[in-house]
Image 1 (cartoon, one colour):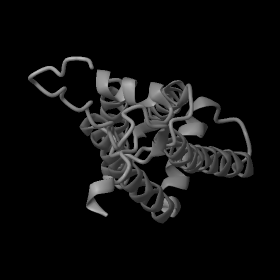
Image 2 (cartoon, rainbow, N blue to C red):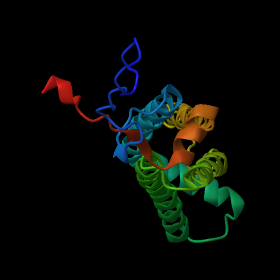
Image 3 (cartoon, rainbow, N blue to C red):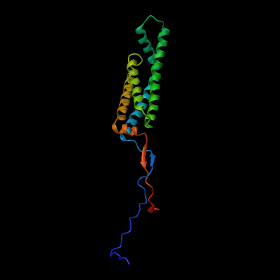
Image 4 (spheres, rainbow, N blue to C red):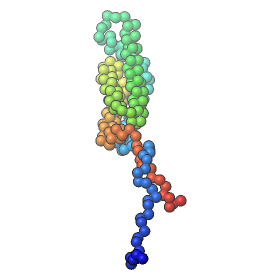
Length: 194
């Protein structure tokens, strides 16, 4: 008969009830602060741009003769109908660009928040178009005393868009958009809690 040791062997350790290597799960996590600031600047710029578009449409009747005078200063040998038509074309071109850029920026913000790739470059392009439109239309389509506040509002909109673009290239915002998806490891419910 074999000898029994004086000490009894300790029982083996109990196996864990949960597996630490769980499957990844897609989740919707809150974006970092820099992304939220970027989104806020974009939204405020949309409201400012919308106000500018409505105001520009309201002062249309005062602006058309001023635009016509600016065209007449270039070449005064044409008929009056030519200046009126040119003023209409210039006004509606500037108006259309303002509306179009605003709508594209809204679409691009939705795509940016959905983490589509290369959205910052398209947003930068819309800002360049905004600044170019403002610079070209200062002496032609935005003249007169009624357009003075409009010039300031459009410049403020360009500034807000620039701030939004700068907030969107902060390191945490870049890392957030590069991830494409938020993945978390789901912890299973503890078996002992049942």
